[in-house]
Image (cartoon, rainbow, N blue to C red; front, side, top):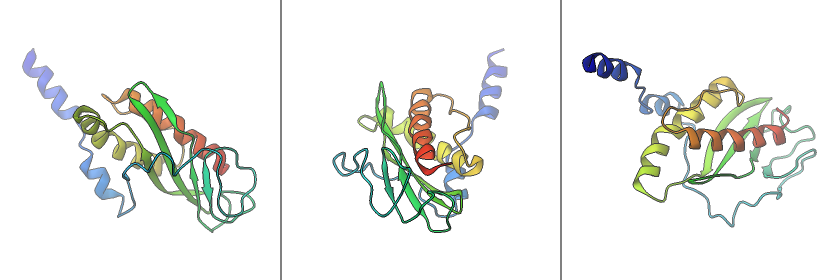
Length: 158
C-alpha cells in the first residue's frame, strides 16, 4: 500500500522549472521591490478609471490599447507575509506578470515560493485571468497571489 502511495505522489508531482522555461524569457519572479517604492494609489503616465495600485503607461481605457500598460495590484496580506503582483497588459492581453513582493524571510518560504510562484505566473499567462488553479502545498501563497492579481486585473479593466 505504501508503494502505491509513493508511486501516486511521484506521478502527481509537477516541477516548476519547466514552466519557467516555457515563458520564453518573460519575467516570472522579481526580487521584491523596496516596500516604500511601490505604494497603493500612485500612478505614473496618463490613465483613467484606475483606483489603487500602481499604473504606468498612457491610455484612456486601460487594457484595450496596443500600448503596454503596467498595473500593480493591491498588496494582499497573508499569515506568512504580503504578496503583491504586477501585470503588463497590451491589446487586452496579459503579456507579463511579476511578483514584486512575497514572503521570503526564511528557508521554507523561499522553498515554497520558488516552486509555487512560477507556476502561478505561467497559469495566469495561459488563462489570461485569475481563474487559475492553486498550487498544492502553497495554499496561503496561492490565495494571496490571486487576491493581488484580481486587484491588478480590476484596475486594468480586464
